[in-house]
Image 1 (tube, rainbow, N blue to C red):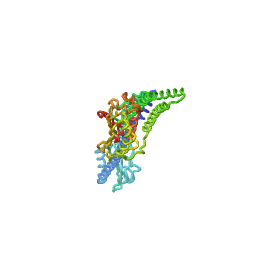
Image 2 (image 1 turned 135 degrees about the vertical axis):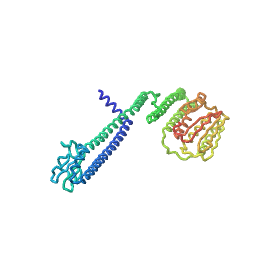
Image 3 (image 1 turned 90 degrees about the horizontal axis):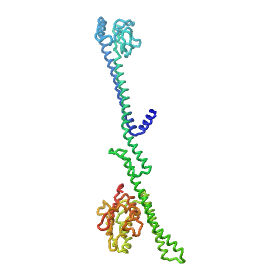
Image 4 (image 1 turned 60 degrees about the vertical axis):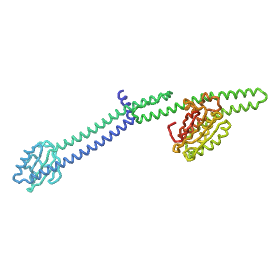
Length: 456
């Protein structure tokens, strides 16, 4: 059971990116260190072997240069000085018989002047030896060697360091991977718990974040922003549904009542039919506005975008709404100097500007004014629609951009309550920003035509 639990925990750790990266880099470091130590081992072994060969050659040359009569004494003296357990020396006759030294028998594969050979331990020299041979002028063969065990011990020490250091690095890498993965794993479990709560219907729940601002926090912030948008849209859908039911109930009830009354009388009143038609048209206008907003919010293409001079938009829209303003006793004026160029869909901007002007004219009393102008700086393109009507309270300036919102002061004014919602959808599609300010009196609607994605 414990092994199964450990396997499950390790499997969970292994799936984390932190653990995999730590293990991967630890493995690379271990391989690099093993390669480094292996190179040190190889270089050290070669160096020690060559150094031992040089020492043997020097000693062999020194002994070979000794007088023939004193060679035996010199060999005995060398064995006494350096120790007969460290050095091995043998002097052999041309026929192979031993003359002097602590080497009883000449190695079979050793050739005078040939490469060094390694000989195993013997009863007289209980250690492996590295030996070379020299043929003297008398024909005798001088064999000299040294204890090879020290070189083997050094190699063993380096090899052991290589193995144990590699294992230690691997274990340290695994331990570091586990330690570094535990905190992200706990945070992932918290994120999973929050995700399950959200999936269960708790739309108020948000992903937990920390002060680290790492990739998990960036992901959590993105999800939280998405959930804010989802909650906002759900709230708008709920509010829109309730508003639709409330706003459409009255005209549909009136139209149904009038139709029933017309069915009971012999002759139809033309004026009554006109009023019924108006009621139905009002309902249809609201549905058309809803579909228009949905269409705008669903658009992602920029196929209709082109360079647009804002002055070319203001003049025709003012001319279009001039008769409507005059009929209501409202003075509509505009000023727009050419040269403010932006990248946008001109048809959609005309629609947004038309809604702003129509809204301003509708809520401005007879004798009032509505003025349309552009911003003073072409580098900061803005369209400004300003009136001196009743204005919009500060608390309602965000709400009036939502679908179907109608202030209590304007609830009896004809309209669907969707005009500013259409403007907001067009502005959001372009990445612009719409701001409503107090004009003292009246309201100033500013459409900032710089791309500022994320501000809405």
